Length: 113
Image (cartoon, rainbow, N blue to C red; front, side, top):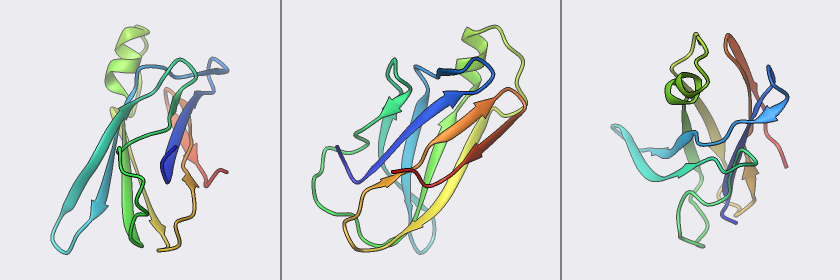
């Protein structure tokens, strides 16, 4: 398991959201740098965005959850084609879990464990 992980729970179904692409990026001076990608598994989780086991530097990071394909597969209308969750981590090597609670017309997130 890497330092940043995520999962998605579709609260409208009470089930994990599988097969959702998530991209991890780090903010640089001028732009965002992609560090890795993952697709949620059957349990709605991505446990490895990068293959590196080195601790990430402190800074601002972003997870982009691409939701259009997920809802298209379910033949479900949705308001959000994607969700960006921006957060800051310390240079302490801690594990940061960033879940997304999702429904077609809303979402919430929090720092998980």
